[in-house]
Length: 495
Image (cartoon, rainbow, N blue to C red; front, top):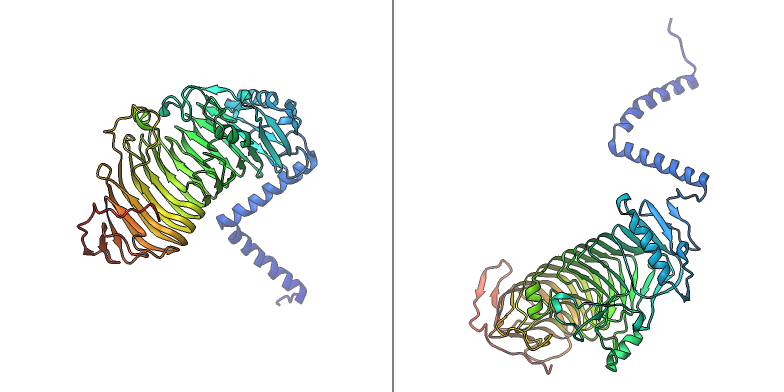
């Protein structure tokens, strides 16, 4: 006799059997198992944090109002723990120095984090240390003291001779560090403000006896990350990594007045290797980005190139100089640079390479790709007569080599002169490639694609029509016409 189960009991048993078959299959998926474990771990940590309520083990350092500051190192301190006030009036220099001295003792234990809470923190220059995170909260602003007597003097940068603006000692940077590794400066878009207005005025009035210093300068160091902050109103160059390796600048806003803020370059990689600059907005009173490697005979002697640099996803403006530059101080050499996915707007020049007799060195293996120019006087510039020198002792036989440069997918509108490549008999420009170029122009005149002493090629059709110095190839890169006029000059600086 077969036992007949009630309908409800039968359905329940079937559901249990289905569940037994489904659970092993579900858990056999590594991805699903990982998600379940992650949710369980996060949930346990959340309830643990909620239960202990703000003790020193919290994953968030609860300092002041606003967004909590994440703990990114094994140990975290607040500037207020060292006497910081944050009212914009008190001198916070000693608080920063005490905090960084304390952090320097945690290097072998994974380093430590210094939180700068919301407020205005007025300070003279101070030095950072290895294995440190400087975290600026939302509405936190570090302010540079404007009295230059409080800015320490330092020896000249070795690859620049006796000084950049004056011979002899130079002012240091507001935030400085050298000979260390593993530094992070980040935050919830807090600000480092150099209050450069007094510096710019004294510079124009020739009242300074020493070269101005950058806002942030890191020297002879490695493993540096600058992210999610605002840098503004630097006395001189804004961020100057010098002879550094493995540097990342990400999601940083850099600001200075577009006029009457002299030499306020945004980011100046100088003799740096393995560097990424990405997702930044820069509007300043000089070059937004300028890759350098030393100046004339001093840079040649120092002999440290800038190489392996990736610049991408930038929006930049420079009404005085250029959006993205290489040089003119490039005597140690610059190579393997890629600039891609960038917008240059309302600028005097969009992208520029500048050098001169006496520089020596080289600029080679440079790739520009997917760039947009929006209202620029000149789009693409290569200039070989940028005759600014540290002194009269430069070697006039030290001629830079400029070669292997490509421009692909370059578009824009409102550009007066799309291309100006100004080589010379002493410094010819070799192997330049143009492909997929379409730049709307504002000046209806011939010779707006200007060339002199340049050898290279155009692949496919580009607009405006290229100069006669360049070979022509079709879209399949088959030769159409060789140029016999590489040394022809049609440069016109009156346009």
